[in-house]
Image 1 (tube, rainbow, N blue to C red):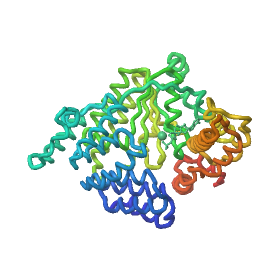
Image 2: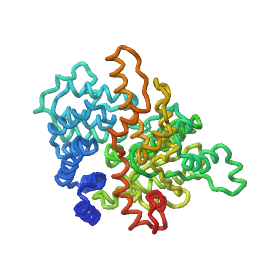
Image 3: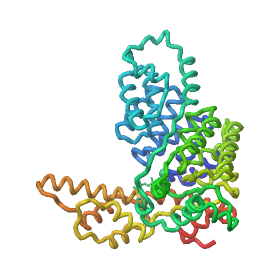
Image 4: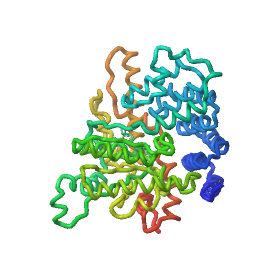
Amino acid sequence: MSEAIEQLKEAVSFSPENIPLRLHLAEMMIKEHLLNEAAEQYNEVLKRSYGNIKAKKGLASVYYRQKKYSTAVIVFEELFKEEVLSWDEMVLFVRSLVKEESFDEAIEVYKKVLAINPSFVDEELDGMLRSPSAGTFTDSDEFDEEEFFGDFEDEKASKQNFFMEKPDIKFEDVGGMDKVKNEISMKIIQPLKNPDLYKAFGKKIGGGILLYGPPGCGKTYLARATAGEINAGFINIGLHDILDMWMGNSEKNLHAVFEYARKNAPCVVFFDEVDALGASRSDLRQSSMRHVINQFLAELDGVASKNDGILVLAATNAPWSVDSAFRRPGRFDRIVFVAPPDEKGRAEILKQHLKNKPVENIDINALAKSTAEYSGADIQAIVDIATEAKLEESMAKGSLEKITTKDLQKAVKQHRPTTQEWFGTARNYALYANESGLYDDILQYLKINK
Ligand SMILES: Nc1ncnc2c1ncn2[C@@H]1O[C@H](COP(=O)(O)OP(=O)(O)OP(=O)(O)O)[C@@H](O)[C@H]1O
Ligand SMILES: [Mg+2]
């Protein structure tokens, strides 16, 4: 067991209620193939946070890795019904179903994958699930699993599993976050628009911005809006999932991402969960991960030298796991803290989400005041809760009932802010591992003077 895991285990024993910490520990355990231990941690999370989606997803992937396909199917099925699976998680679900020879259901889920990501191609799955004979393939005696799934991995690894979208949101759709918007504008948008000006002033062009902070505070949303702002394409790469899927072929595929981006410039390439690369220093596949990191850095440097209309953004909830090589000049040399929205930001987010809804005299300022520590996603949840209640009421009364301040205040009481758990972990890093003031923003946010 690696030192990192030992340390995390100790930390968890000190704060057993810290859910994000436990989830992080479980993730690390998976990376080191400590599958039973990881399952144990996920179960502990579920005891404390009933129905926790991340824990359920984690468990499903552990079962899959343990080849406990029928159990994996049960968990995946539940998540699928809750509509919380991303398309690549659905691919794992399909694979589990195929293993269980539940072809009809596999076809149904596979269709969903293709609906979400039409460019996803997988010949093996296509052959089995798209052909008219699908569902009749039950002769498991003849079915050489090793061979089938061996090929399957190779096939898939060489396939493209990312694609470009055209976001329809702009900066003005993002409430608050003025400082972060300004950083993005000065560091990557303006250089793209005025390369000569930047050169004249001797400003180096290139590199990206790494956004970090608690979940639901708009990192992904802002990255998408950045693409919308300059009417560019948006390529979203979720590294946790994709590295797993690429297995062994990561470097080639990483290169393919950048090649694809170059062909589709101008575009924003967004690497979500970059900690997936850094956290692997303790990984069993350590040396191969090292190659992936080097490849990634080389591609980033390439963007800098060619300045070919690619904006690189990245995000993480765990900046402390990101390899420090990423922070060198010309790479992710801007590390920007995306804090929970301040009062003004919350007012704007509320307005955004109430736009186009039937409302009546909403006291935005009062609501903004009573939602301190709420994330953008939390505010969205509050509006959803109030909307649903009003919809029910309208149907019962047979008339359109408008949303009021009171409805929203009631929803606020029903929904606790989700950012605090993250700060529980972040606080420790900011206090005890704050090299060169990297996390000063966190300390400032928490009003801690060191
Ligand atoms: N500043 C904002 N303005 C408007 N909506 C926001 C804002 N911040 C968050 N939201 C809403 O909250 C949702 C969740 O935000 P988002 O997915 O970008 O969070 P995140 O920081 O990427 O979280 P995670 O770390 O979990 O990936 C968004 O889809 C958006 O609807
Ligand atoms: Mg996100």
